[in-house]
Image (cartoon, rainbow, N blue to C red; front, side):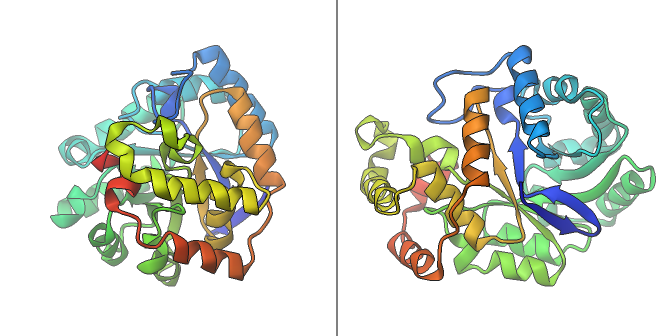
Length: 299
């Protein structure tokens, strides 16, 4: 496993997202929400394989509780959870305490806003709430999950934001075109990347795409051909592209079952780093993808 250093902490670059533990999630998900027994097996496996960072949220059904039971007394973990802006605004302290209770923790490594709504009307009241959470050691860092460049600009300017979770994949290249990675590094803000597999779209067959994703047929076909030409699986190509570009960022992956967790980790540990020529070629080939394809909120 590879690791990144952030302010003295050694965090596994590959981090586990747990939305599937609390919801039926992902366009390609056919197995549904795993039960507690299977989640325990997944957590045990990834922990033994040196993954020490986990992402969850109160909005992910009972994901926090399921994860909390699964991690038990495992040590040296970095747990990140998220709250929607309206919940944070109502009572941040009470909501964080609920997350801590669900997860059986005394402190979160980071608390992220699940949306950027609060950033557009940021006030001293919210700043004080963040500082009080840190002072009471209920959270170590604060951040936000962003969806577009306006969100990113606000996150960059806000001195209380230390983590920025962004979408980034072969079809969604705003991290490259808007230079999110370089700009965040300049401000010493940690980038946490989600949607590497575009909620499973990269694993689907063109013929089985739903009607609302008809536009994705052509780019998906080109993507599949790229994977074949590189002698890589689709997952390997999708992961390698992001890993090769975002060398100092956390990469979030999810799984519906133990087999997927094993496959993802094995693929990552043996991942072929793409050279600059291939990265540039892929970037050029998929630079004008329609937002209706790369933005799941438009599906």
